[in-house]
Length: 324
Image (tube, rainbow, N blue to C red; front, side, top):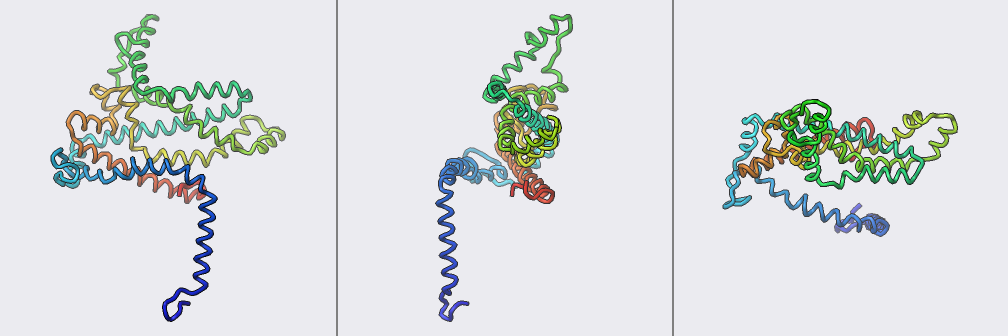
């Protein structure tokens, strides 16, 4: 109870001092980890939070004289322009379908690679295999695009040279929209699956080895150990990574699509054009900065809602595996 003169009771003062000491002790204990987080916090402050006011461009008819906040306010007209042009539906369809294909195939292959590496007993062979699998991740997408052109070029590409060598007719890959979904999914897997498997492999390294040894003593086969012990232990890691991936399901891999397909091949746009490549053309060809900003705004809102929805579902099914 408070005293009549409004003073804080002695009991509450002691409670506040106790909680402050507890907080101070916790801060001292976690200080090394907090210091390690400082560079990441600064990075996100500079590159994620400070540019946020620039989203106002999406609601203006941007011009250089007025700048971001001096340009005429047009509300949602930029989004209406994209919707009425008939492009938004196709762009969203391509972006979502490609990202779903990337998400499913990449996680399946990453888990498979991690399990196979975990089953290898020769440490030298395992490290050598990891090095070869991770190497494509460090190759620039520009070089990947050049490799693709060297293989699929209809004039003097490797693919047509091999086909003609065996008496077959050459193929026009850059004029055939139907084959590009398979090419892009394969290239995405080749470049990122090895590097992405590191997280799953690290999770397997932290697994209880005694449980595996006990299963082996009881006569469990390798397939049974993988099915009943290894895969369930990867479930929390898989759910968290999928949740994080779902947040960017409306964001296309610009580097992959631009360098493999380019922006001038109109024949392939129906099957390979995603939101990022459309934004790039809008900004470089027509200088439609407001339209590009509006599309980016839709991507962010959609991703935010999708992460919240998916996390809510996971929280109801498996509360321990939810992000928050």
